[in-house]
Length: 266
Image 1 (cartoon, rainbow, N blue to C red):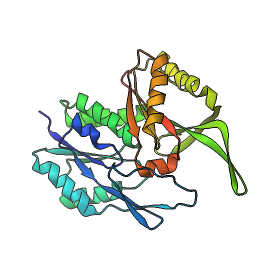
Image 2 (cartoon, rainbow, N blue to C red; image 1 turned 60 degrees about the vertical axis):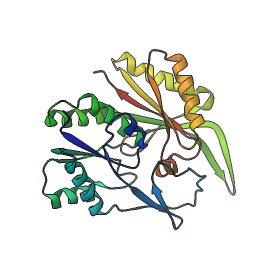
Image 3 (cartoon, rainbow, N blue to C red; image 1 turned 90 degrees about the horizontal axis):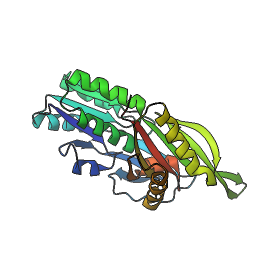
Image 4 (cartoon, one colour; image 1 turned 60 degrees about the horizontal axis):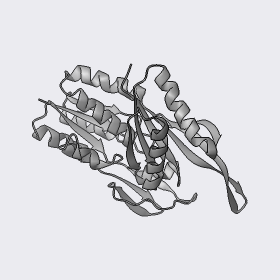
């Protein structure tokens, strides 16, 4: 029997609750963009974001964390695990830790996943697979799994020429691990080759890959990428995470696609 409850924030698509952790508690995040309030509830449609748009996270109240931690305790769970989205997007960890201090409960674990959406979903599936382990061992597995997660996305290369913008037939490949790291620049025509090479290189060193594809604003983009990668990697399980939340799309920019690469092997 599971002895721990799960808390996540709303930078993850909530359809995971249809399969696992149906009683997980959600901390709702909100942002101001050009003086308009956006509540990240996974229903907000991505719109085209201009370079001048300003995005500002609204701090989560400590009371919100106290509420969800109490909610999980009321369900009978001795331990509560909060998987926090990367502080790059919004810092919830300080307020969560304050809530833990106020509740004076050492059995609340606040974990910086250094990730978002698909990365957190990967961790939830790892947790579900290991749910019968002792809490100390489970927490160790979570931290080890965080180290195995890589998020790689591709966005169009754009140059500014005064008032004009020119899109080049290039993609910038960028890694996300707590923050963005430029990886390399590739031709669009080489996108599929680049992705396959990245996957196969890791398989050769012993990985058992776990892959989710995602897109900044169009579900169709994610579906196309999933189909193309699967065509050349039929033995690799590839699922479609879908479209990322608004705040993540703001940083990825319109037309971006990517993959979450996890590892089930050693």
